[in-house]
Image (cartoon, rainbow, N blue to C red):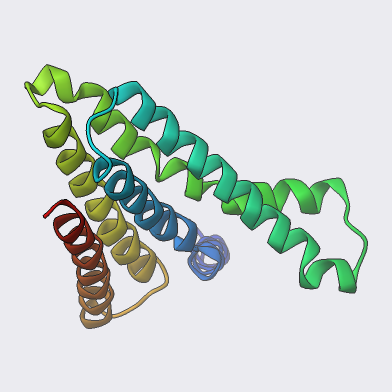
Length: 172
């Protein structure tokens, strides 16, 4: 590989690193944990309802974020076009993707011998792990030091524990 090719490859990595944004995935994971906590505190329910609730809530929040991005500051600056709309939809899609692992955890929980309460705890654990993982991945992808990666992961773990404390408080 020539030095020009090597420079081009490095520039491409830098551009991807600068563009990497895991905010939606972190937010979506936190949202999923909150949905599970809220639904789990209401009592017993069919697992399918929780799976559907997680996915639908992710979709509704995705639409809300797309709307906010497209019709907030963007509308005042320039008219909307199809490429802009599609780009914003892609950028906000991680909100929906973050709901999938907790929903899958609920769906497979019977195979693990878990009752509904166990399924709720498993889904919350998966959502909080996603929140922590996405925040660390985003920081690392952005070129943050390991110290900063650890700090953001710790903050997101603490936020997840706050959500878990809501479940404990609501059910006792």
